[in-house]
Image (cartoon, rainbow, N blue to C red; front, side, top):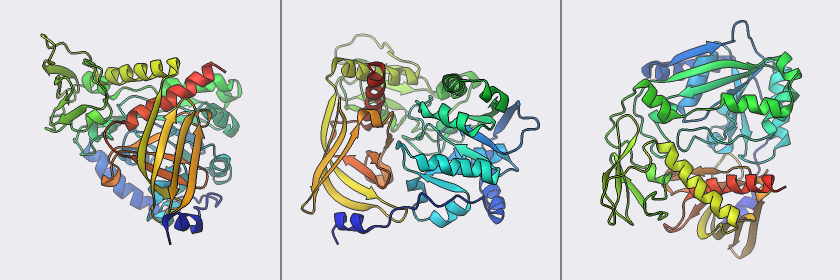
Amino acid sequence: MTGIEKLRAAVRFDMVRKPVRQRGYLRPLTWILSFPAVWKHRLAITKKDMDGLKPPYLLLCTHHAFMDFKVTTAAIFPHRANYVVAIDGFIGREWLLRQAGGICKRKFTNDIQLIRQIRHVIVKQGDILALYPEARYSLIGTNAVLPDSLGKMVKLLGVPVVMLNMHGNYLNSPCWNLTERGNRLAADLTQILTVDELKGSTVAEINTRIGEAFSYDEYAWQKDQGIVIDYPKRAEGLHKVLYQCPHCLTEYRMTSHGDHISCTACNKSWEMTELGELRAVHKADDEQSLHTEFTHIPDWYEFERGNVRAEVESGTYRLHVEATVDALPNAKRYIRLGTAALSHSMEGFVLDGVFDGEPFRLEKPVASMYSCHIEYDYFGRGDCIDLSTLEDTYYIYPHGNDFSVTKMALATEELFYAQKRNG
């Protein structure tokens, strides 16, 4: 069968099946897999307003790296939890993840079924529901946008809300270079909303409280804690996030090697220090000084966001690239569909192509996505963005070098909030 025929015939992931309590025989396994890892990184957990609190409750967690799940297991010990996991996390291990309490989600879709699954865990099972609402690993060590619907769900559940704000997980293995650095970890486990506080709060007030609890900056934490990361290749991959030169403003010509990030357009270069700061070490072709535009790495990222916002506000933002497309209808395997055209503009995403003689078109309007999920060099296939419907997820790998999935992610957010501001 052709790729499109395989996709049409594929049995979709069963999103309706009720989640099970984490099986008792798997609980020791989760501890065995988690505790040696967090002990190795000298994890310190600080608890606040947690005395006497027992399940059920909603646990909201920051999302930095795979280590998050091990830290979460240690933080709630000896209690069990159900976890919301993206569909790609189920590939080849659906049975195991279901038995461990996993609940499948296609990212950045409006999934009413997920609310039913969460209510089942909270109301029927009386367990902890662990949710990572940022829905992707932090790109630059700072908190991502959260959906406005989060406050509505919290209000609906009516159970205590606990926040797990983790520190060091991103620094240990950032999404743009997954090699572990070995630094120490910390986490703050805090009850941020009691049942009585929920009853007396509006959805807007709940969202504000959650947003404040989600605030973090990994590089500021590293500097404040004096954490030295001497990994020789600590900057390799950073150009995936920092795609625009702050000196000459050229996009898509950044590169990185060892502990340096450089612009191939103007030849300016910066060193990433052992404390996670940047300093210019090679002047640009037209520059006489070694001025460092941004010592704090997240400031460079926000500079890029500001430039994307300006494109959105002027109505000039657009991207058009050819891309290879894989589909993931279930947890068995990816299905290669072929090549299509990906457009991202003021109207949103359009994926348009012909697969094995059959026309294909996927549209994701601006209002349908407050953010999006991206991956860097995903399984060695290249940078990609994934777009989902309730039945399928499409992994899209743009061709060439004149694009950045990071810019697509920033633009998705800026387009959504511009439309929201403008009504």
